[in-house]
Image (cartoon, rainbow, N blue to C red):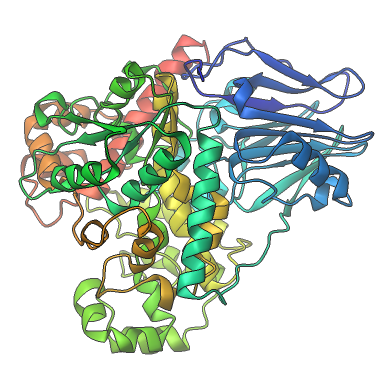
Length: 604
């Protein structure tokens, strides 16, 4: 299996004479050159973009057509049967296949486009004078529209990305389709967004039967991502990645194992990686990237050097050269698909909110809940009697942020971090205004459902830039835990069965038990590379101080530059939160990269 270098993409167009045209055959930002086109029965273009042949299934009936783009476990005939059996394109099953893919369909009246509920595949839309345009990336629509980003939305991203901010993109004319929803558009008329019809999660599965279902969905996901491959590669350090690697070896027969060692003396990933490789056997070769071969944190923060452009400013974009350091080695060894264990934490590690919503679960592990995640009896009582809807909670949070107060019921719906000390009063006001706007009509559903999928979507926000960067190397980065059917299988068990603060990921250990020894599945540590980040900050302090001297964010009145420069020099100051600093730095470098692209393409 060979893959062309670059990110796959699509743009969907209406069935009208005056449909918009693409500005050039190669979008900027690391996308593949346009190579594919699918037409309506009228002969007009429906889809234009670029994807490899093993990434597409196209099926038709007499009056309907469907295209799946991505990693797909179903056969073309199975997809054709799903298309034929649905009462309309509105009623298509979003879980018709395993894997991770966009689903695009049309009949004689409507076009339907859907991504994944996990957020691995997103959908964006804009309205033009000539109808609508739907795309796989917000950046693509900004390029088609020749639009610059909204400076007012830089402020809201200083707090990171949460369920509310996912309703907006960085470009005012580009709207996002919320994960778990699909877009329905008249083939030549304005569009309307509808919630996808998705199966409800069951909480009736037992521990043993649930683990079997999860294991089988992981197997189908691995097959979808490794279609036609004779060799794949995988991370192997944690139980999450080791489980996926084991299934990858089972499905493909040959595996290259990868470990990126850490400078952190407390990081034991390499020790556990060698344990896993020894258990997997002689069909596995192990590559270790030594610490001296890895860049420090903050060594390569100028993302414009990579030629990549991203839909969102997330901290992942600052660390891509270090994160993908071993993937090029895997490609040289013949791997075109690399598996990660990302998403395992999001499915199998408890959130504080799980205990707030379940007093019985808290009572059984009350000592650990108090010490490990800070949930005591008073929090349980408040959670049990709180009747705040998500929109109401967002509005109250907005008022708290604007007045520099603690967010009420901060652990109820999701975690909104405290505003960093270097963010200005004006920026606070802008963040609060966006939260108030989002709070009017945001649909969150049930609390547990929201918590579970919001956690997953926060993970895929960080994943997508890595997928884009590895695609530029000609490698497909696969994270099966983030596939919808795998996540739904995990959510089919009640939190009481999935989580424990007394044993590390007990459900995942059961899933992995046919492949890995008890010793491996009993690991209860996790490599965090904390000292690596602090050393990187020390090594690059002078460069970072220069970044925050006449920065974009300062010119927009969003940050207190002198304070931030002092904190870079004194990172042990309690006002310095490295996570929030990384988010601020990501927003700054994202804005700079966008500015350079705008100059190159003559937008300014």
